[in-house]
Amino acid sequence: MSSPLPKQQQHETYDEFPPEWADDERMCFLFSAFKHNREVNCTDWDSKMDFWGPLIVRTCRQRGAVCVTLQELNQIFHRKGSFPLGLGTVIQGMVRHGRLQKESEFAANVDSGWLSWGVGLLLVRPLKWTLSTLLGTSRVPLEESYVVIELVKEKATELLRVYRSSPIADRALLSFQELRTMAAHICPDETTLCLALLQLQREKHVTVSLHEGEKIVKFSQPGQGRVPPVSDVDLGIYQLQQSERLLGERVEALGEEADRCREEARTLLREGKKTQALRCLRGRKRVEKRADRLHAQLETVKGILDRIAHSHTDRLVMQAYQAGVAALRLSLKDVTVERAESLVDQIQELCDNQDEVNQTLSGAALDASDDLEEELKTLLEESDPDGPHTLPEVPTKPLTPGMAPGRSSESFLASLPDVPTSEVNITDEELDRELSRLTLADTGLFILLWALSLTKQYCPPNRLPWTIAPHWLL
Image (cartoon, rainbow, N blue to C red; front, side, top):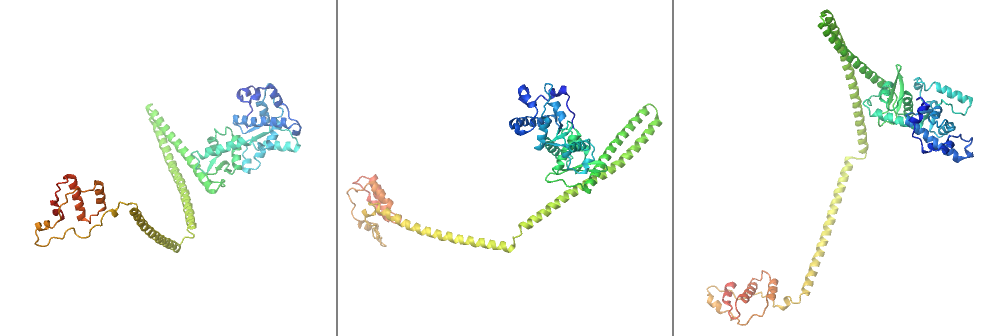
């Protein structure tokens, strides 16, 4: 437990009080004693509780402490020559609400290993608490230490986080001294560290035991719901790690001793003391031999630790393999080759049925399309009154009989009708429309109409060169 602050320094250190602290009238009410019964004036009672309870927790957090006594609180909250008269009642109320707890009660549910630590925490005060309980007093003793549960939980959480993020997190067991060195910035004293470990032990994240008179701590690893008990394997690994540490320190010390012997021999040689210099060199050789022997032992211990680490990794791999095989067996429980083949056949049958349905639907669409084409053709014929009805039918016979063998071109020309002399009454638009209605199969009529178009365009009406027509028609 931390020591109380001197009165002359309390206001210099704890100057962050609520705004009411400067109000004399308000503080006079808050410094007054509680009524004997809350039912007399519930408002005043609750107002004092709401003021002092959070203030006590905040003050302890500022001090870095997790436990406090009534005597300390009287010194901390001393104001203008007076101290609060109702702090004892406030402590009792916080105990009833689970915000404070006596140190003796806080450690009552731990094993006997903790009771043998002898840190002045769990031996004397439980006797005082038992005596005061037997006497039946309801007053809060001035030196009775109370644990602030909220702050202990914060310290425990921070201690576990620091351990898991430290380089020694892979070690199963730690000595209490190693843990104290690692957590010095979290738990400034041994009492705070013990209380944080007690909280972690309540949460099943820490177990504490004694090994050859040395206190050792085992933390739970990430993913573990609770810390397993200390096993013989853990103790064996811990002994090997301690041997490694001691051998390393011894080898380093022997190396420094060998260097010191060499420097001493060099100094004696400069002074002309050859015999003493040789004696120092012989001592250096002996030290180096011991260092080499210890170094070999150190390498052996390191090799054993490496094998243990590899075996641990192999065990994890084997566990992963076993879990994978079990999961695969469970996932393939209802999967067989026959069932897979049956599913494939069903899928193929469904695909074939779908193809047949698609083909049937495509045929129906084509039939409907043919009907629509016929109806569209009929509509086009009805909507064109100047169509083929205004023109004569296309002749199916040749315009002129073919030339008989041996017949001359003059006799063929003489058989043609006379060339018309009147102007052709047909417009360019009508001629283009008629040409568009003809097909390439009607070659004779197409050539004739094309010749008429050229004749009308390039020749005068009274001089039409119809003499070239027989050459086109041949």
